[in-house]
Structure formats: C-alpha cells, structure tokens
Amino acid sequence: MANKDAGSDMVTIELNAFTLWRAVVTLLRLFLGAWMLNSGYSYWAQEFGWPPAFPQPFGTLPASNQMLVTMVEVGLFDFVKTVEVIGGLCLIFGLFVPAATLILLPVSAIVFFNAVFLNLRTDRLFSPTYMGVSCLYINVIVALAYLRYYLPMLSLRSTPGSLRDLARLPEILRDSDNNHHH
Image (cartoon, rainbow, N blue to C red):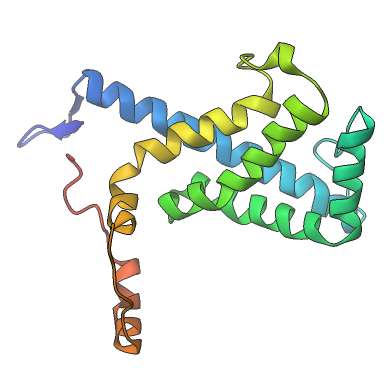
C-alpha cells in the first residue's frame, strides 16, 4: 500500500504481509502473462514466416506428440495460441485479469497434463523452473488472488437475467476496484 504525504512529493510504501502478497501476485501475473504471450507469439510468428522466440515443442514421447499434432491438424492449436496471446496481453496490461486468468486455466492444465502424464516428467513435478508444471501452479495462485471476483458466479441457486442486462455492459469499463484496500 502506497501513501503520499500531504504537501510532499514523497511516496511511502508500507512493508507488510498485504503489500508483499500483492507484489508477489503482480510478479506472478506478469510472468505468466509474458510466458503465455511468448508461447502464443512463437507459434504465430512461424505461421507468418517470422522467427519464433522459441520453437514449439511437439512432445518427446509418442502420446504427447500425437496429442499436439492432432491439435494442430484439427485447428485447435490455432485457438489455443490465440487464447495465449490475448490472455497474456490481458495479464501483462492488468486488463480483465480475473477473466483472463480463468480463460488461461485450461491451457495451463493441458500444458501440465502433457508435461507430467504424456511426457512422463513426474521428476519435475515440483520444479519451479519447469514451466510445464509451473504455469498451472502460477495460474492457480493468481486465480486464487482474484477469488473475490469469482464469488458472485458461485451462487448456489440462480435465475437467468433478461436482455435488459446488456445495458449494464458499459460497467465493465469502470474501475471495479474503487477501494484498492480490499
């Protein structure tokens, strides 16, 4: 939490657990966003004849290779890589972060599944430097940090709205974090 002293240009930052938590979540959000953007860019760069940031791996074992090649052949990889680019940009720029985090969760889960179960890399299950597993862990941590935005969706009983609810769409462009001290 930052405070500006009255009559001064000096900003002080309180170093407490809340500030540390927000800093960690912000760094994880930016890292995950950059990784997703880089992964999506690398795929699309090759599609346009540009050099990738890193080559797209297609699995070291047959089951992994089969899954990834099939995803390419049926067009699902195009969708996944587009989601990575859009979700990554949202995380980097801090836009629609709760939604982007949820949208990227299935991508992270498939990356994890491919790495651990199809490529049999159980030895790296708890390796923080191996993005095959870390992307899911980071995605879950960031999602949990934004839990308060998901709670309204978890209504036990709910009823459908009406077309009049569309009139509320401009609300998404307002700052939903009016009180930054939650």
